[in-house]
Image (cartoon, rainbow, N blue to C red; front, side, top):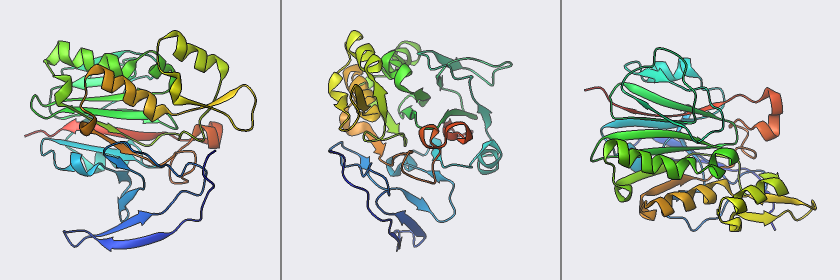
Length: 276
């Protein structure tokens, strides 16, 4: 059974730099996530007035910038933070297509993944419950951004992206870093029998589904676990995966299509190689 919701608590502490940070306590919804995943961050930690979440380990990568924007943080804000970058987005179609970039595209491109080894490009995916995944190869200085909903997951977008990075840039899977951004949590992502059947038909683990405790014929999907499985099978080191555990459906500072429907905005997950 999902754990019950608890009240929100906020607090402040000082990091090593002396700058003050804000921590948001347990979510008010049912997705108070508990995980044994290595590199799991079960609460948001955001600099005061910061519109983005970041992964501490990735902050130490001197060659790139990255982040997972909160609700209301759009392109204008992103460009003001990183003015030296050309922002690149695709027309997302819930596919398994990865677009490789040697420079800013001169027309709209379709796909749910972006990859490059060029500096000055800010790769962006938009989500509102789907899972954003960022990939980076520190040795070869290659990056990718993926938009993984259940359709992209069942088409093995994350797994295929690793193979494509190896084929295109020579990235060794064991050397790739993966950052999982916030998505709808395992206790909120209700799907039907058809989704579970698709996973089974594709040979993906049905263990990422739980039977819904109250709705017959419905299941709860763990989207992060489903994609973690793919990356492990693709050869990534589990110690190179980091996760933000907040549920978009439960956290009011995040956009959620399941919660807001047509009023939901889209959050921007981004990664870019710094221009030197």
